[in-house]
Length: 151
Image (tube, rainbow, N blue to C red; front, side):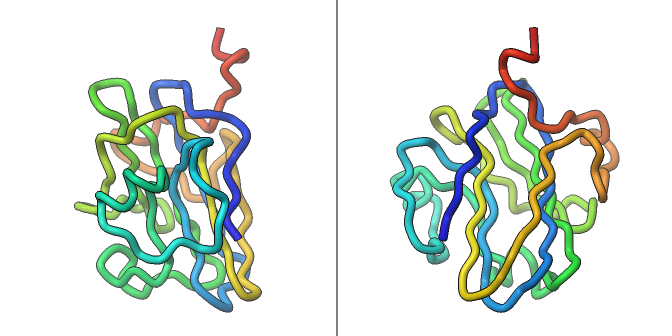
């Protein structure tokens, strides 16, 4: 099952976390537009398929991205930056940036989205109190803010 957040990412920079509470089968993390079809857990997609489906993200069993490191207790972080060019999502494992797997040039208004299957469960954290705060240039990113609260 795929679930999209109900708060669009309208701020320049945002960070949120997804903690794996149980991993019985693959899960999916990323962003999606409201035009994305709610569907079963996405299969692994290339960039063209991501653009066509309006789903930009990765499955937990993607060896190129997560290298088998996702298990119960792992915190997957995501940053969203649209302040200096086309929107980009970066991915983190337990607060550490995963180099070279960012997804850039995202089109449309997106929201944080997750997917689970066959008994897996995730806990989402959109607040400003992170379990695994990112470091470096990402340490000042805020949690997801409702647009009316940015004024």
